[in-house]
Amino acid sequence: MRDMKLLRQAHTQVVDLNSWEPDDEFPIGPTGAKPKRIFICPTPAPHGFLIGGHRYLFKEPSGPHVMQIWSEVIAYELAKVVGVPVPPAFLARAPRNGSPGVLVEFFYGYADRAPARLIDGIDRLVANGFAVDFKHGSLKDNIDVCRLQKVPDWRYWWAATLAFDTLIGNTDRHSQNWGFLTEAAPGGGISFSMAPAFDNGTSLGFIVGEESLEGHLAPDAMRRFVRRGRHHYGWTSGDRASARHVALCRAYAERIVGSKATLTRVSSITDARVDEIVSWCRTFEYSVPFSAARARFVATQMRTRRDALQSPLSGRADHGALGGSPT
Ligand SMILES: Nc1ncnc2c1ncn2[C@@H]1O[C@H](COP(=O)(O)OP(=O)(O)OP(=O)(O)O)[C@@H](O)[C@H]1O
Ligand SMILES: [Mg+2]
Image 1 (tube, rainbow, N blue to C red):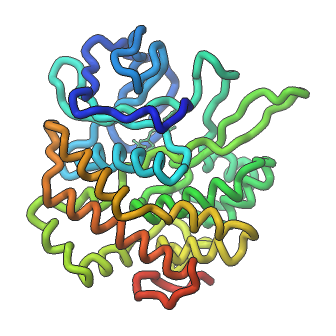
Image 2: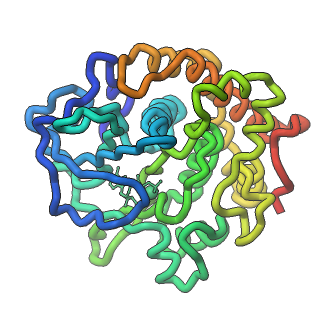
Image 3: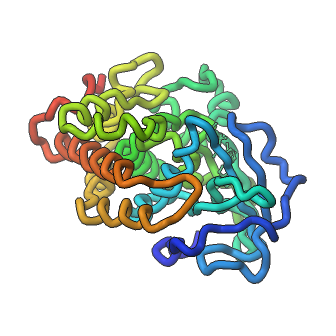
């Protein structure tokens, strides 16, 4: 990926996919639950944040899921600030009918880089004999498979991604929403690295309708809402207590030497940065409106999630937002 700091979309730059070539042949397969299409960006690229000739995934959540478009875009904006590798995501309009969707940059297939391909986490878990199903698993198994694949940066990646998922309240990091990039190793064979954290839209309370937003803003209501957030997996399989967002970060920090610094760094977003991100969202006139109430809801949520995470990392008493014990 290029320098992500440069890649901010302006409110006048919602991507119009009318002149984009569909890439019907690309074998992304049936992975994932929601409608999606693949397009090739025209050359020259219509906006500076796009890459001409590169492949993009266009996801069109609708109905009660439509706010996932914003969640995915905000997750990317947040990821840039806290330094977590996440594929760039932009607001877009479908060809012909102009219906809304999120356009996500492919994180491999760059013209100036070695060819790579994505292997879902679940593929290597199964290949290495772990007993997993589609929606469940354990962080310990995920880490063990990373070790088996000799991924160099797994300690950092899981710390950064767990903290990031906690900040956005992502409830969808199942083993088809993380994976490995593989490429030919210099001395022969194949090398594995962690792919950027993709599919980040099931987050930030996307399911909460406009009429219910205000009701979540009181501190107690928001803390209750945040406390309910869980991953698919706990530290070990079936351990539901440690599946809560902050509890899983704490479990990780307690077991993986050196991870606390990364968790702390990622959780260090300031109020001003949070406010700036939601203010930027408010500048768009888009067919999925980002209302003032939504801005307050998202900002309050991110601050509450951050505080819930920072509290145990700094050794302060927990505010009751942590969830269960890590073991
Ligand atoms: N930026 C990307 N670059 C390359 N491949 C991607 C990228 N994002 C997603 N993919 C691939 O496309 C598949 C579907 O994308 P994604 O997981 O974002 O949506 P989804 O699975 O439909 O959503 P959900 O998991 O909520 O059902 C992924 O499992 C992955 O294989
Ligand atoms: Mg997915």
